[in-house]
Length: 198
Image: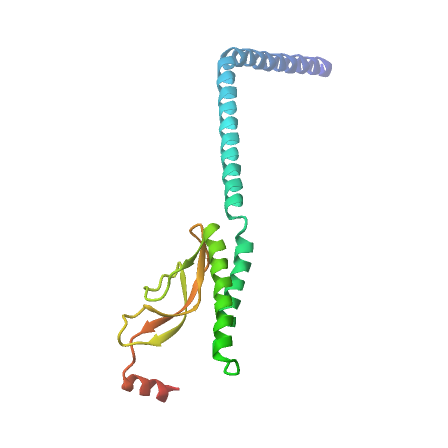
């Protein structure tokens, strides 16, 4: 009796499995028939997306290549700015040197000016431009305020002193101008109060 029950259960299980596999096969056949066009559309969509992605990547690489070509010398340009700074410092030290004769000073300064103008000319050919600062309103995109100078004649925030010249390369900031900015003078009472607090 137990064997008969076991055989019956096996037959029922086989019938169930057969019915399930028949259903799966018929669904697969339907999927195959219905999805041929869908698969074609899906493949077409994937191909279109892949092409668009490749095109975007190509454009991105082109842009990076152009920027590298255009701004590749930015570090060299920044280093060259030190030459201009050193020439200006040399000129100031010669002017302030009292041990040199006036005639000798003038000749040395003249030679330094020639070198300085040559450097600026090379910069200009390579689209490196000085940033104008004196007399302008402070612009944080081009100027960096290093100190405030009391000036009753000037509006607050006007550049009254240029400590170091700033430069741009093809419109892009190489370094900001280091400047002194005007501020309204404090009244004596305010100064005294600050001294008392300190």
